[in-house]
Image (cartoon, rainbow, N blue to C red; front, side, top):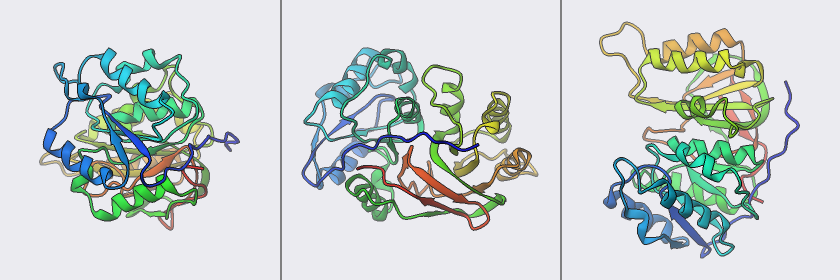
Length: 303
């Protein structure tokens, strides 16, 4: 199945542009936040609301606070880009409140993990967004990751290709890159906030999910007809997903599941919760060569 849908990129950032930091999901560690803030503040004029440090149980404040903060950042014409402080949990709670919001002009939103829910909503609106490190993860990643992120935000040129570590199903596919965190994709699937997946390359990664849970979520995708609509699968990192004392690995389970789809699939792309999390533009067109283990970006994440 081929996708003819084009996703709209946001205008490119420039050094010194104003950007907003938001916390649409879980509360976060202040030291990691400050360290990540220093990295992007060396490049951009960073603003955040004082209420970002609020806590409500496991959330960064109430749904109303977090949604208002997100909407303000997306609608403020002075803000050129939006960085998320942390994933965790909470972004899905905001989706009904965002139903009437259509940010214009578009601007890049950066985050991953639970932030995948917001990416899916933005792709539903036809926008490109950036699957990349949250602020609290950024200080633990190699400096090259930060450089790639800034280049992705500031240049309309396609990002350098990514390389996988394994081929599960050989083949070549081309289409928009959609998806993100596997758990979040399955939570948003079947709701009004899920973008059409026709002809897409589906990106999936996760953390802390034992193999049977990965199987359960993958099976849900299959039952929902996802593998009949997409044309390829790019698997990122699956961290801390092993079953103790088992004679099989999470990779064994994922390989078997991928083989059953018959779709081109490569695994081990440096995307997700591990020691590497290279940013990628969701919604941008890519070419997956699973046998070669390459994911080539055919367009940029900004215009």
